[in-house]
Image 1 (cartoon, one colour):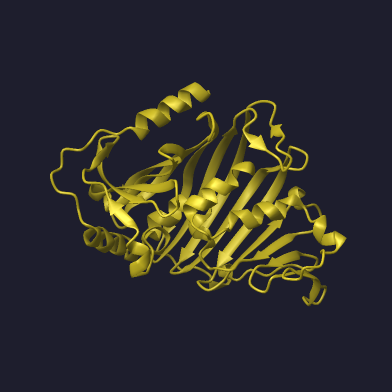
Image 2: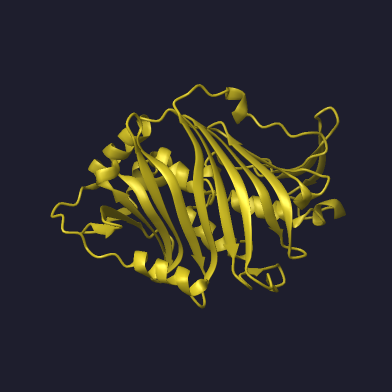
Length: 348
């Protein structure tokens, strides 16, 4: 299985130069992506994701490898977008790193354009739901499962950036490259030392991103290839994508995923209440803005467990908080897409 997928990565990863003479400049690309984004005011997208973890592709906190054999799981996802607001849900099995077992998890992430919030329930956290209030509203831009759709429908904030400074980081390859017969302009971002993010945008498909990849010292670490269908009213709409994560030392495929969109609804009214997340009583919440850990009381009051800026050791309840919360915090890291992908490898 690894050999076949590696051949796919190598075949797609080395694209021949296109024959187009003119490569669009950054202003042309920005204008096209702004137009693409303005076409979709709201979207509701549901998908099924099949993930294959290769044998010994995961590591726990003590560097013990697992699983003992190739493992396939299925998850279902939902993304709802309304302007700057977004709601993401994921339902299915996830690895519980402490004991190397798969446990059911239901995750919800919301952002109202100002703050992001997350809630995890299910086997993976036991009877105590785990909540998170993030430092930034941009968590969904780097969420691995939601990212292909976010950059397709919200390419300006999630791909280019909204400030002149953020856009200056991009360089454009001097020649177009061809992916599956489609000519693409290649954007490169090398902000992180030794690492680089690249995007392949197809001018013939309204500059839809057909691929993005993370490189470290010239080697691919993660690659995602997207396919679209043409909609008469809304242009090129995502249909499916495949992604792989490679082992940094050996280059072998550790994790591969195939996602198929099952429902796509565009520019229909969306309930604004979907973007406001409430924590049920008993939820343990990490508030990254206030640097606090607390439990939601029966009357929705805040019962403080720890102020995270204090130097004193946190109480036992905090120290024993399930590792799943650590996964959640990693998943909403907003330090940047490259750093995010590099650091999440130990969790899968």
